[in-house]
Length: 231
Ligand SMILES: *Cc1c(COP(=O)(O)O)cnc(C)c1O
Image (tube, rainbow, N blue to C red; front, top):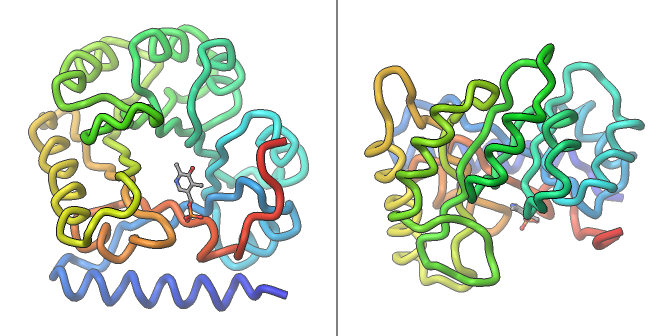
């Protein structure tokens, strides 16, 4: 039986050490529990341990879990590939979308966000390595998408998200995270700060925190191995 409280304590300790190494003020890194393939029971245990933010990749799986983990203070992040025909349910049911990478999806989410809900918090997914099997825009594609989302009243652009190439050497991984941080700074303005950086997963979150991450997306290091794949 995996003890999520113990895992969380280890992660928090390592995050604090990474903050100290980077001389960053030890505040403000969200631990997003990536719960795809994990049971609702494990998510309940994470909730009891203090987790409030959950990340899901697949709509049907997420909706089932929302029914069963219905605490009003849970915050749901969509972190999977977005199909255009699934935007309505994302706009209606999620608090954050971390994987916007094209204008068509942004426009649909803006149209479909219910009027009585707060604006949808969004991150643009960047793909600086231009890996074709992953979503995300490159540096050139980022500027027009930032400008578009700025003009959409039902979306609130908060920052950038990255899923770096697997197997990067540590120095290259650092470079990648720092490049994303710099891009976010370049595209920030006083009235619209891109101050959320969703970078780092179970295998590399300490490096990501050292490079400025404010949201680490942790699946297996928190929950253990995923038991179910895509439903
Ligand atoms: C699955 C997933 C994660 C979590 O990966 P772990 O290695 O289990 O921590 C993080 N981000 C995204 C986008 C994912 O799809």
